[in-house]
Structures are given as C-alpha cells and as structure tokens.
Image (cartoon, rainbow, N blue to C red):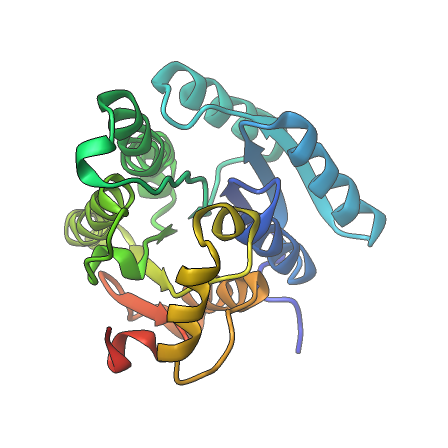
Length: 252
C-alpha cells in the first residue's frame, strides 16, 4: 500500500511515549511529516530520533498542553518549521486513581487541565489553518471510563467525558469547512500510564470481562487514528470509535 499521508503535517501531542509514540511512528511510516509535542522534551526528541533513524520525517516540540501560551508558541513553531498542520492526534493525558472523598482539588483541576482543557487549546490553536485550507482531521483520545463508572476514577473519567463532548462540538461547528472530528475510545492498553493506574486487582477484573482476553497495544490505537485521518473515513465525523477488545459490549 502506498503511503497515505505524504505531504501532510501531523501533530501528535503526548508523542514521547505510549499511544502517542506509537501514533507518531505509524503516521511517519505512512509518509507524514510528524510534529511530536510533549511536556517531556527529551521523550519527544527520542521519538523523533527513532523515526528519523528509520527513514521517516519528524521533529520534536516541547509543550504544556494545559497552558495557552505554551500551546500557542508550539503551534507557531510547528507551522514555521513544517507548515500548517493538517491532522491532529491529541494523545497527551494524565490519570490518577483515588476515592472521591480523597481526591484533592489540585489533582482534580490538573487532570481536567491536561486532558480536557489541553484538548480544547490544541484544537483551537490549529483549527484556523485547517479552516483556511478547507481540510483537517481532529482525533481526540477518550476512554471507556467516561461511560463505565469505575471506583477511584472520578477526575479522569469526567475529563474524558468532556473530551467526547468536545469532539462532537468540533464536528458540528467545523464540518462545513472540510474538517472532521472523531474520538477514539480505548479500552485497557498496555502503557506506562495504565501500569501506574491499574493494580493487579484492576488488571484481573479487566481481563475477566474482556472478550478479547488481553490488554490492547498502543499500535492498535495508532492504527485506528490512521484510519480516521485517511480518505477512507472522510464521511465519518462526530463518531466515537471503540478500540476496547469488546469491553463496552460485555459490560461490568
């Protein structure tokens, strides 16, 4: 299959590791010039180095997605270095686990800031160029936790529910400009984040209820993002794409 994204600038936030890193590598393998944005600049540069070493095209950028000034500066740097962004995959996110009554306001606010406000700020910074070009793909990362109430997942679940709603709002407002917005809903995926959030009890509960008896791979989320960004998905917008091993249909 010929590379699908030659000539496209793809911005992947949270591209230093996990799902973001796998997504950056997937788009690079499909011919895109990938801007890898991450709070951890060394991790972003590591991903960029791995891509260029394999013959792909990538550049690293540091950003705090919850900070409007940082996002604006990053978006300008990407445009200056690579050109206007055509495709955004917003993978930057954090998560914590604690009972509701033990969740402090600082943790709550930080989780909302990174996961939800960050998605809003990055999309807002890139949308004007997409509108001008008459083309754009916005892909946000939600979570099954926004649908299924799990103990100790309060701030994370609420932030991801907001991401799902934001996706639909972008789709409704910008579809007339040739821009689609979709939300990937991952199930449990083997990443550094889930290793921190999922103790053995949680892992066993997931595996017991997953029709596909394993955690997903970051590359499987990256494949879904590549599909949603492709011309094959040009008529899909405002959609929630479950990549969850059947978790949602099996329930808790």
